[in-house]
Amino acid sequence: MKLVFLDRDGVINQDSDKFIKNVDEFILIPGSVDAIANLSQAGFKVVVCSNQSGLGRGLFTMEDLNAMHEKLHQQVEQAGGRLDVIIFCPHIPDDNCSCRKPKPGMILEISERFNLEDLSNTVMVGDSIRDLHAISNAGGIPVLVKTGNGKKTLAKETLPEGTKIFDNLLSASEYIIEREQKELNRDE
Image (tube, rainbow, N blue to C red; front, side, top):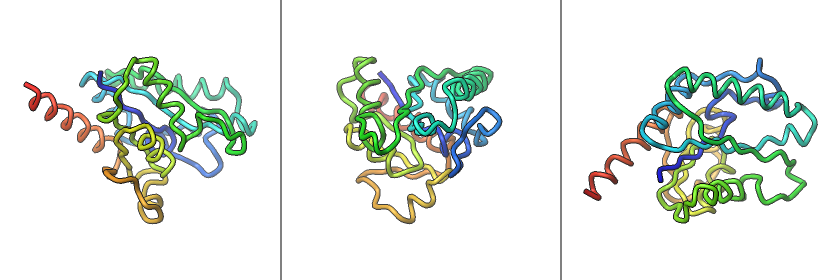
């Protein structure tokens, strides 16, 4: 099974230090919807995997979050794609839960749902070190995009071994699809 994990804020939509709190603040990064549609059309199960501590902090409601995700679903469907799962951690960092990235809890939960035991060929695209460590801790492939906090992450952090770096989700999706094609051709 082909499965790809995408962080949300800073990868799919613009990020904010003040949190994305409602559908009006949920502004898509150019090319991100096309990237998701392309991945979906190439046969990937596309999973959005996002820390959403704004819920735990009381900065927005579940209804607000659902409205943002509904907007995303609609945009992706209009582009001819599909989001298979949106999973999020509502906890604040002090809760010390097992799902908040950089812990791999959300990735492992989705992998279990899809009966995917080997994550060595599974990619997560993110803009923060937390995203990269979450997939690396689960045994997958970290991909950093320079949107959102990506440029800061690249400048300040030591990236997990094997991290791939791209300008944005659209260029990362092209790499992921091409990589999968090479794997298929090698197996034939």
